[in-house]
Amino acid sequence: MTKLYFFYSTMNAGKTTSLLQCNYTYTQMKIKTLLLIPEIANKKGYIISRIGLIKKAKIINENLNIFKYIKNIKDIKVVFIDEAQFLSKKHIYEIISIVDILKIPVFTYGLRTDFKSHLFNGSKYLLALADKIIEIKALCSKCTKKATMNVKINYDKKIITGKIIDVNKNKYLPVCRFHYYVFNNIS
Image (tube, rainbow, N blue to C red):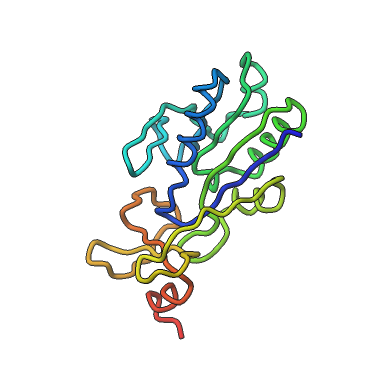
């Protein structure tokens, strides 16, 4: 059975590295894959991991119908999508059609929540509709507990607020729930 997978975690958990490794494995087996990334995450169309792995990807913008696009590409056997939290509801339903109608497995990777602990729209629909939901574990940047939240900081390591979508990844730290509340001075 073909499935829709959602791999989620906090920042710095290795989601992109895992995606690129999995893609590499398929391509070594001569299986044709397609890499996708939302435009908001990388306007030049690259999937880039923190450890230096990089691969060109097709950009998903608001006008792209992912289902129609993939339907017209010959021999695609597996689809990988990075930064899936930025996908729209419409895109999630197009991905479901890829899985259910075209019978192509889709592996999505992304954050579950933003730095205010609110679900991203794409993540909300993936958590509700994916066949398999897999957490990639990360460690809190302040202790050895499992990180479940992200905090947004400035370069002096002080908590900051601002717009939700800010792809400058150096401004975020993964933290456990305890340190999330300590950072945000919530008691």
